[in-house]
Length: 93
Image 1: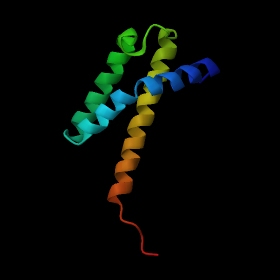
Image 2: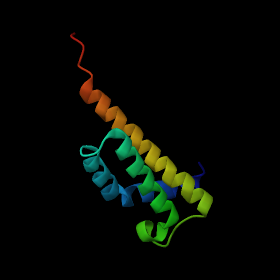
Image 3: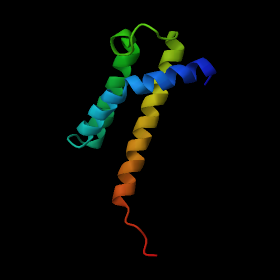
Image 4: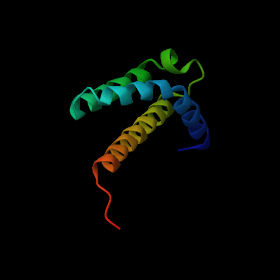
């Protein structure tokens, strides 16, 4: 990822925090498969109508897709890791 893309990624990650909070809440009400599908629909919606979610300062379409996909991949990974840490008991030490 290039420097200008990293800059957009940082900005967009902040803008999308409320969206991610909503997705975290929905995770508790949907099956894993339904939740992942909803997350992907949300990602695609942002890519297809970026001005609606991110404002007018957006990069070219290819960069936008890379940035938004990266943000959502990292988000899903963090959610899975968080869930795993809650379900794996601590080892006696």
